[in-house]
Image (cartoon, rainbow, N blue to C red; front, side, top):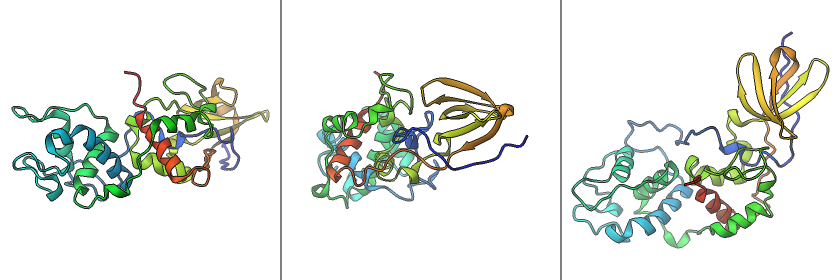
Length: 271
């Protein structure tokens, strides 16, 4: 029997909190950007700001606040010794420069995105308008008013109703995290959409999809039970086009959103 595609319905109200921003171990790259391209088509404000914070703590001791303390290098003026493309910047930061004081840094993808974005926009960045997030207060919001721990685990501690966010700070850029907090429906990735299945005897099963192939689908249902379904046994099967993650645009202030984003960016897995 041909399965009927249905796109209505929902599951676990306010539960699929950050499913919109997690998909395996993939790392977000700005649309239209390719490795061979000199520069990304756009640098997002949240990434620039995140990069400014990293630069201030990690780079200013050698490069100075204005990025002009190394002879032949002036970041604010766009002057580099060995860099042409954004990928050159990433490689220089990651590998260092042998024979110089430039040591390698073990930054994650989101941190590298921030550093590159800041260096490319250092001449026009206004630090006075920067809103610094407080990660400790963000954690309090995550565990309290945001009700995130009702669905999400962090490094294996918590429920499995939605993805574990323990390494979200390495998987997602500052910009994507901030956009997801205010517009989850606009940022959800297809692989993270919840599913709804109806068996031939009328039983409805909804949950978070873990794996799917031509003949079967595996998911965690609303009771956190691992379930494997044969598509041949289903009357209906749908990947829902909506997300149950709420928008925090009107729930949290701009500072609280910055705090929550700062906490999420601090989650970089168990070391």
